View 1: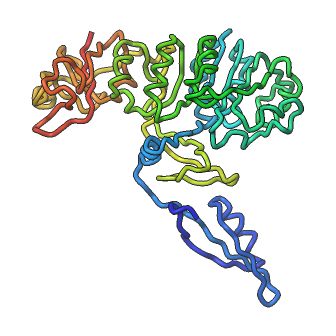
View 2: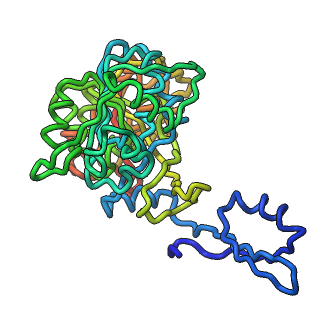
View 3: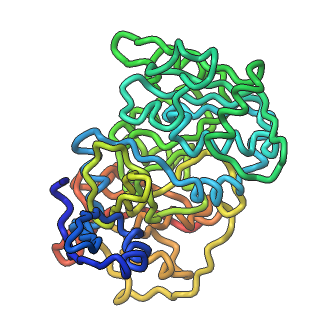
Length: 401
């Protein structure tokens, strides 16, 4: 039994009461021990509960162990991407960190291929992925035996949703592959010396990236800096997920300051992910009825360089400046603002605001000057600002336009 679980309670029920108890505890993924005593069937129910850990422990563990294949829930993808539909007409979409039969990004775009007007969809699964082939063995489909248990890519040039009822699952994918081999192709990817087949840094992946218009994925958390640098190098449009604190990275913040990337519509959100089988769950994680591990990761942000109208909505300011309420930092000439909603409407100087400000940032309303640690005139470069000799967590320096 995994060390992060313990037995919460044990109950033995008789044959007569067993059905009711079974219905109640199935939600919690119990184990059952059946026995017969004096002609009566009984079942001992072991309810397995999870130990509680720190609220951000899943993310920290992923970065530490490089075990960071978190698979985004389909409902979250649907809620976000509907706001960007107009950007996808006639475009090639590349999901370059997505096993096609685990990735809900792939499922979403196949399901919405026609509605979004896509030209092509490409998804890749890499050779060392712990979940590759666990959902849809292509050995079941004639003609694809040569790519089984290898890194592979799927290219979709067209789909046929026969009943157009919106329902879509893995069986539908198999049917599409069987019936549309001219529009859906699957091919193996080669090991690229330094990088395994299907790795976003491999030569084959970069070749596809050059052709693609928009990249949509959940990149490995431990490689976020390198991943974003590649997207910028090749001038690609993108929609990606990571932690809100990425904005404080020295390599990432200049991109935000220069309006080369910004948050999606949702920002600083706790999200549920499906974890790979080897992952040790933390926090509020659980195992579902299909024995898949689910974890909750807080402070998730979506980053993009696709425009949306929310980014240009003005932030309504109502607070008035006073020296007592908005003190200056001990070590920098700017006032401190504790909450985005408390940005004063009548102050024209430099203000330090929390990083959650980016969720409300309107480039026509505010100018971003820098971030505390890396602002050029910070007398203590690499150090955060101080108030009453106490360090204040990351502050973005802004000024009203």
